[in-house]
Amino acid sequence: MRIQLLGAPIDALNMKETVSEIEEFLHKDSKPHFIITLNPEYLYRAQDNEELMKLIYEADLITPDGTGIVWAAKTTGSPVPERVTGIDLMLNLIPLAEQKGWGIFLLGAAPGVAEEAAGNLKKQYPRLNIVGTRDGYFKPHEEDKIVKEIAAAKPHLLFVALGMPRQEQWIYKYKEQLAVPVSMGVGGSFDVIAGRVERVSPWLQKLNLEWLGRLIKEPYRWKRQLVLPKFAWLVIKKYKLKI
Image (cartoon, rainbow, N blue to C red):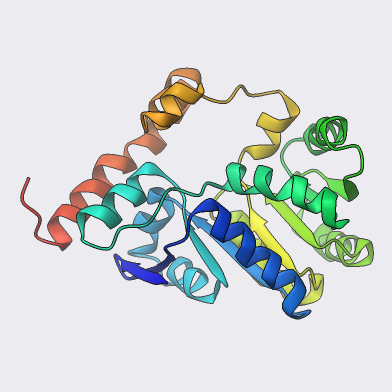
C-alpha cells in the first residue's frame, strides 16, 4: 500500500515487509530496482525541485526514513507502520544476503571507510559475499570506469553512501548501465559500520530523538537540522492542521 505525503508516494510497509519486497525484487526479474529511503530533508527540498520529486516517482520502493515522515503521515491521516531508515534497512538485508549468497558492493564515503565497513561486516557475517568496495571521492571523468567496475562485479545489492541527494541522482543516472538488481542510498551508514562514527543510543532512537543525539554528537549538522521545523510547518500549513 502506498500513501501520498506532500505530493510524494511512500510505501506504508514495516521493516519486515520492506525486506520481503526487496527479496521479491531479486527473485522476480533482472530489472534494476531503485530504492529511496525518504527523509524530511529530501522531501522538503523536493517541493521546489522537480528533479528530486521525479526521482521519488521513479523509485521502485520508497521507505519512510525518519521520525518526521512517520509523524507527518500519521498527522495527515495516512499512517505508516514504522520508520525504515537506510542504515537499518541495510543491516536487515545483510544477514539475508549472507544466507542467500547475494553479492554486495559498497560505494561511497571517505577513502578507506568502505573497506573498513566491509571488514566489520565480514567479521559478523563470515560467509557474506562482498564483491567490491570503492570510496566516494571520485571525479566526474572517473564515473564510467566505476560503473564498469560495479557492473563487472555483478552484485545483487549496491549500497551507495554519497550523501543525499547525490547518491539518489547517481544511482538513477547509471542504474541501467550498472544492471544491479537492487540499489539504494545509505547516507553515512558506512562510517557507522566502520566504527568511525558512533550511532545514537538505542533509547534515544526509541524516543524518536535520534536527530537530537546526532546533533549533540555532530554539532556541525545544526544547519541541516533546521529543515525539521520547516518541514513540520509545511505539513501543518499544507494540510491546514490545528496546532
